[in-house]
Length: 172
Image 1 (cartoon, rainbow, N blue to C red):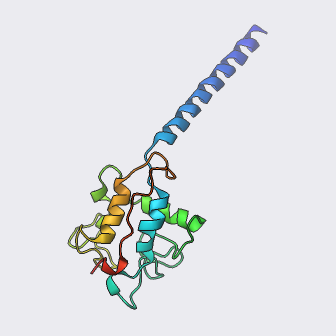
Image 2: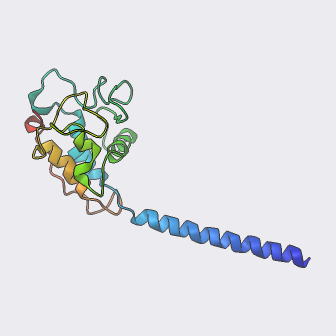
């Protein structure tokens, strides 16, 4: 009987320790840096769907021959074309873009380096060609600003600092 009681006490203590660890994990997750989804929807995703600098007849980032999630050949970066704000597809695009962002050094984000002219990218050249002539490009700056403005929560009230780029003046 005493052994059984000690066993039950040990199980209860282990359960308490596990519960404490869960609380710690939740608190850490809540204070981890993220990126603003509202700014992504307004300032970043339109770049993926837009025709940059008058490239009439040319494909966009989200086109089927590029980074489209269904039929794109653009490596690991896959996105949905023209998602509705707040939709599952927009959230998927947000997470895809965020996974190529470097919160510690935004200028070293793969999402910026791959399409930047003259930069040796992390995995090779951007097969879609150079998109941004330099880091002063409006679309490059919109993505850079989004990555450079981490928030505690992706829906934080501190979102809303981005300025949408004029797509016609982005790129070559």
